[in-house]
Each structure stands twice: as C-alpha cells, then as structure tokens.
Length: 105
Image 1: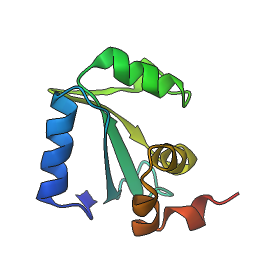
Image 2: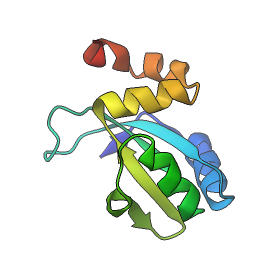
Image 3: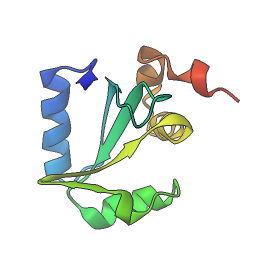
Image 4: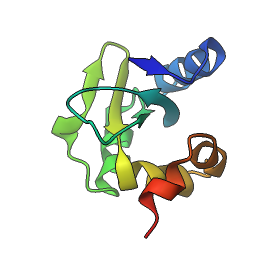
C-alpha cells in the first residue's frame, strides 16, 4: 500500500520518467516483506542506459530495476534511499518523511 503522495506528484514523476529524466517519487509504504521500511523512493527513467548508470553509483544492479511498462525504476529503501535523496537535492523529502532519524550514523 502506498500513501503520502498526491496525484500531482505522481503525474509529474510519470511525465519526467517518460521524458528520459531521472525522476524521484517518495511515499509511505507498507509491505510485509520489508517490515522495517516505512517509505520507498522510486527513481525512474525511460532511458535505461541512464538509469543503469545512475544506479551503479549506488551499487544497484540492473536486474533490480522494476521494468514497469513505460516507468522503469529502482525502489530505494533505507540508507541508499536517504543518500540518493540528499545527493539529488531532495532534503525536503528527507525531512517530510522523517528519514534522517532512522538512518543517522
């Protein structure tokens, strides 16, 4: 289940992904497979070479890409999620979703 985002943010993410830009979408998320994770950041880009290259900088493997039709993306959790958001200038999202407390140090 996803919540904590709105249609405007989702639409902007989809448009940016389809345009071949690296796009970030963060939302609250509950999944029994990942009980310690309360958020996920989807980093998407329709330009797969660009997405793969970006992911390599964080140790992400191409086989971890979720190849959703028109919206290929990595799902980021934990420290990598925080690091990627901070590196991309999304400190506001780290604060909004209270991510720093859990991943300090």
